Length: 135
Image 1 (cartoon, rainbow, N blue to C red):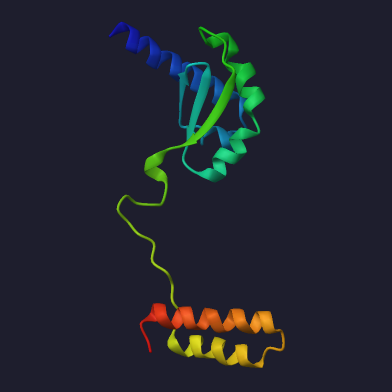
Image 2 (cartoon, one colour):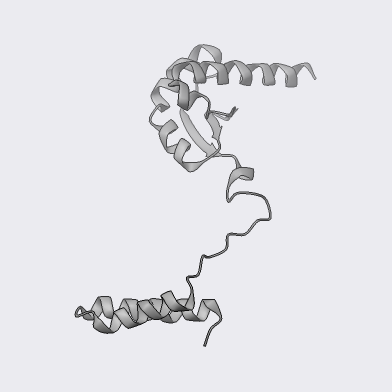
């Protein structure tokens, strides 16, 4: 048990050090950290924050070096799995325009002089019509 508590305490200290070297808005997004093999895993809530955190890999490695028992070779930013895709079990639903708007797209496709654009608009209107359940 003592070993586990020491691991938790080390992770807490490392996370505090990471947050100290990051800008304030970004520091709040570093949620958890864990050392696995010779890699530091830093967890955040979204891909947007993960991409921002990656810019600070060198600063993070330098900041945590005095706190780790063995040298860390790399930092890996991970997204907390429970946060991906919104609420658990929820499914995104497409926002299908009204039949009148779909008809407007189809009619406009017939007046466009660019063949490629005209074809794309026709396909779009056909797909939207099918998804709306009409015709």
